[in-house]
Image (cartoon, rainbow, N blue to C red; front, side, top):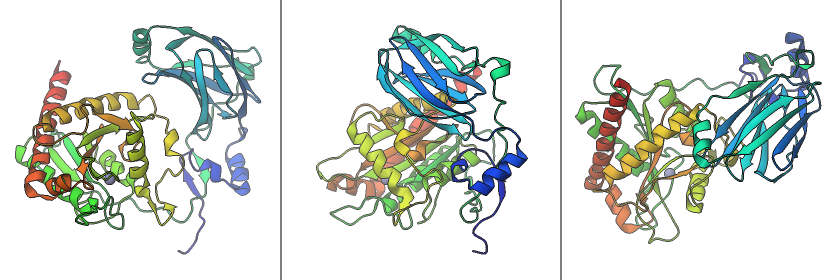
Length: 422
Ligand code: ZN
């Protein structure tokens, strides 16, 4: 590597924390606004009142609701997160994080469904008071579909809005060039839906290994991905791309990154599970959620997310705490579509593939994080189970899995097109 440090202009946000002093000074010269924003000094929780106090001026606040589990999310522009108090009353817990370099996000986990019935900044702009009103679950669900509500402090006590477009950052090493995109197969018709199939693991990440045969998850997932591709192409209804068509390593962000760059309409990540209990068997379909549906789902997500860690080094773009992934508003519609598809896939594949549970499950899988591509993770069975492993390694088993995916994909897009046509 010729130079290990390089000045670049990059999007604000995740590099901000790594800024050195020189970078801060340079940023200050480029941007005359105060670099250090107001901090959230305190969050006070009453029975149905919440007050956020700021150490400095902030630029504004916006609030929106997230359902299932029910939360109120507040983005404070021009603020840094501070300490969170314990919950109380309607608020079960308070969490804070950085939404981007200049915006703090405060999440109020609710003990019962509640709306923000009033919100206002103090006359000096140094605090924001909210009043919460308990509502029915139905009313909360309805309100959660509304766009976010924006609020500003009085003009004379308002920080200028953060300059979002550019910041100075120091990348570690040189940026990796974007991967060449895989070939899109199928009819040369841009209007046909595009499905990206992701064969889990690969290269120096073998995934789970069968204790019976030594079979590796990465080989099984690739064979399954190819079988699914072939069946989908034979239907003539969709176009298909594989994130990998050979034995190579991709970090999780590259996998969904491919789907995003190709503007895929659906992303299916194919895996095969392993458990210490060799009797554990059956397939499961997972979608993204901040909160796991059960402990096994949480453990599985933790394990699959480790695919980014090779020799103790996290190669993912967003290293750090994946358990605290905060999902944005824009992701909700995508997640609904993914859940619909997960249910459909389970229904359509059930004749040919044995499932572990009757419902689809969810957890915070990094590979499902594309905000705009409906994504599911298909754990096709347990390679730690003798029967499952043989089924998944056989041409017949692979065809059966592929048939289930093909049928579900066809119905999914037929429904989507019908819905859009109305
Ligand atoms: Zn896996």
